[in-house]
Amino acid sequence: MKPVVGVVVSNKMQKSVVVAVDRLFHHKLFNRYVKRTSKFMAHDEKDECNIGDRVKLDPSRPLSKRKHWVVADILKKARIYQPPSAEAIAQSKSNAASSPAIPSS
Image (cartoon, rainbow, N blue to C red; front, side, top):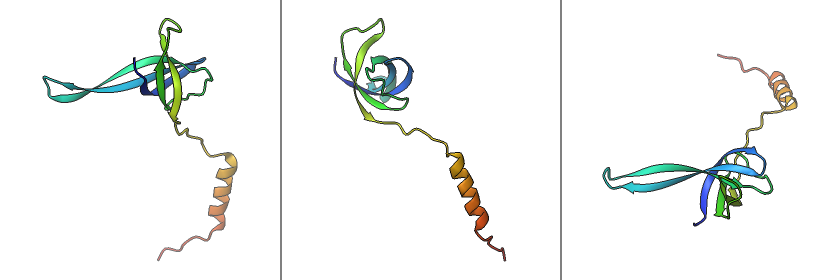
């Protein structure tokens, strides 16, 4: 098997991730390209992957009943939303209160 690239959809297990791999193929009857998604379980030794990361998987010997892939490297880290802290919210409110109001004409 050759290496595949996919997106991490679950990392709730220890040292394991579920990766969704998309593939396109040409349908001869419909004369259209069809997208199919396969989900593979992969071994993540350092437990570095998060949901949304784009990873490259290499085939390996069977590591468990469903796990036959190893995360080779993380190609692109996902952007994780971090809500603003309470200090930043308070500072933005104080800046808005101190600025003069614009009179409407």
